[in-house]
Image (cartoon, rainbow, N blue to C red; front, side):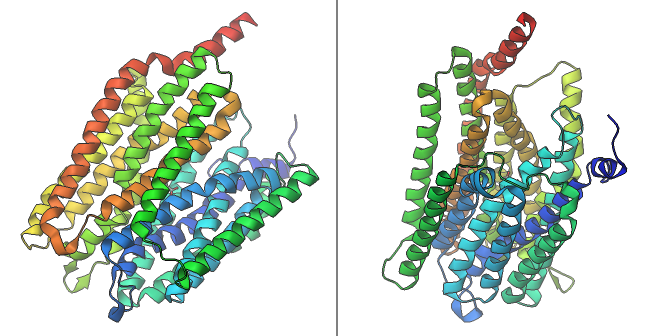
Length: 507
Ligand code: GLN
């Protein structure tokens, strides 16, 4: 087949990848800049007292709200993906999602309590619409047999983390030296740049995801539009009632209920797939192996997501941040995660390949258990740091940086491995749904992380070392149990592939 010059450009224009990847790379880079730049400041802003322009919330309430926010961002990725597939297509979802996100950041920049919560809701809904669809569009740039796909995703992941670094550094600096107003405003500008870039380079996508891939019938469309409008109306009504004080909500209790509710949704969905979907015995065993990965993922994010909450507060209140007259903004510490991802990703990609060549092939379950245990060891570092802090010392920044290093190594062992496990252990006809269900583990983990961080009580900081020790021991125990069970599920992880190979040889 002969390709026209234009088609050739679409195919190979961005570090040997389709030109469309540059559109998605930079759009997502700016979106992540705005997301992490703002997110890094949320707990700091909510716990800052009123006189200093903050919201004066207790640590427990602020971290519960933070956990709800981060959990909701992942949860709304489910309807976001559905809306793109069934109604408007990926391109529109990214465009409108970005506009909603930018409006949310503008509302935050106004810095009043009522616009603050509405702003957060906008960012949740916008990110739910943009994030899963931009990620899926990356895959759609490659044909099924294109060997560049994994490298394309690795490049895209770099974009995510470069954007995060810019966000942490820029918004963090603005917060300390110019105020929250400017920092939130910068997040809005970042998303704005992303939107302009997306609009101007849209043509590079060559019409990919321009329309819904599985459009609904006209009547189905009407019903779902009505359902979406009703949901938005209900969310709006709920917000107005809370803000006007007509209903009182305890954020901690609310977060507990939400964590339980999402867990129940997860378990019900998973068990209905297991029991009611006519799976054969290989598919069932494969789903059990995947369930183990889901538990590892939930525990992992419940610890890892302390980054924006308890670790962030530790950076602000108990870490020495002044060097030669320069005050390191607290949120800069969080950028360590993104820095380490950029530096360590190539090393990890090579590590799995080399281990494979030496016939050391840890299975998914073991890799995830190792990731969980390494993440947990980061909290042992925090245990020692918190002991020094509880004696009234300001600790050196390298404690937090070491913790983030261990968290990043854990992330690289678990996160990409778990995603790949979902795609390989899911029965083909349910792979999309299972990816959505798997995302709920991020959601549950994030809400639980907020609740756990609520115990980080600055008034009672003798408890701090214990808190970190408990998180650490709990996660290590979880990791050991998962590793033990993973030796049992090891065989089950390859059943689907063996079945497919058998079918192929028969055919
Ligand atoms: N940091 C990555 C991102 O923002 C991954 C986060 C996650 O998988 N929970 O996309």
